[in-house]
Length: 483
Image (tube, rainbow, N blue to C red; front, side, top):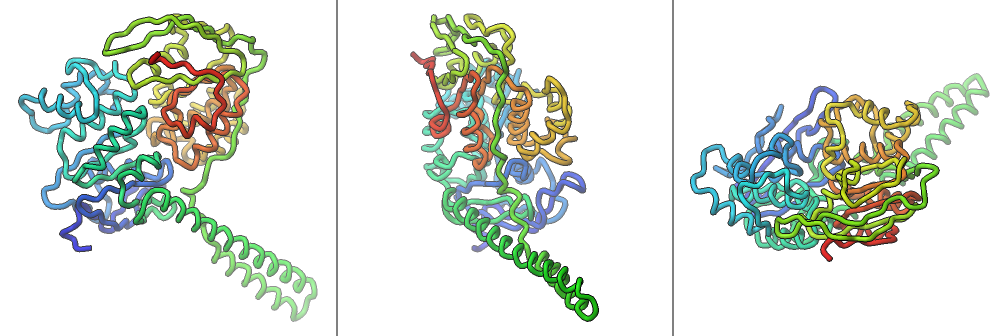
């Protein structure tokens, strides 16, 4: 591929967060103009860091990142920064530009039309639902009309209509786009290839084909590596057994035993270090609280928002011990607001039985203390703190070693999600509240999570816009806020 056709090129780029956290080591890859590619890799591998290197928010320690001449770059991040939540819509878009943009309001209206969102420009960002905030993040990148568009989990929190709208836009988008997403169907609709960030080698592998093709190829490679390791392990053990046998004979047989041991060591070196990024979280069970009453929650009314106006509507719903409720409705109608108020015990018209321990998985992880370490966060969750049990549960969610001493706010969004799941296992709740639990989560973990939620014996309330995920979970009642 000639360099003139490249919109972006990495030449032996290296970057790390200190001595023990390498992200890239001499990464080499190029993306041609107009290409639409997916960026894949395990939670915490450094996908968002790679985006920050492209936008020059971070600088490489070695190597060069070369965009095409005078290219403009814009990124739609996963979440709105906490210190921007009190911005108005207008202030949020003004902040996208280094220089003041005069007469910005028509530009805001035009880009909000593209993402299918209509909102007053003086409205606070905090008042928008998670799905509406996702649309604002996308619009903040599009308003810059960039040559290189970077999208970090753009479908998180979007309902079905929002995802369809975004997909249609990207199919017709003529400029280069790199997308981080775990939504296979979404990616397959418009991408031409995949960049795969390998957390073991810290290099970027480049593949042609769609998301499913790449996943199948990587799975086949892992299977091949596992088979090779199994054969080598058998041969190593045979050599060790022979070495022990000949060593016991004494005399000249000791030299034979030595050669056997040396052969075993050589074979050990041939074993393949199976990809760490392809590890999946362990199967897990969320224990339920004991001695829970028959009726866990009673709902008599609920607040919904339609056309920016909030009203209270009557609903008569009883949620019994062990029942699973799925709440549905379009972005902005009030699902997340209701779940947050319910978890806080302030939802009018909803009554949770006394003594119920509530486990809450919030889509923006604001229920976590970002200034606490992972260790302190998890140990504080336990009714009877037990470090050995806590570490065992955490390890099942790939939370081990140095990660324990990292502040929650420094983790990737996907790692925060895994910490939140570990919390729920340690908490042993009587009522589980899930707000978009697949957001940010690696695709390999999602079937494991679905199985755990399906088998949960306690009472559960779920909000999710991912039908394939919901289909794997036992649902006893559905509450449609749009009706």
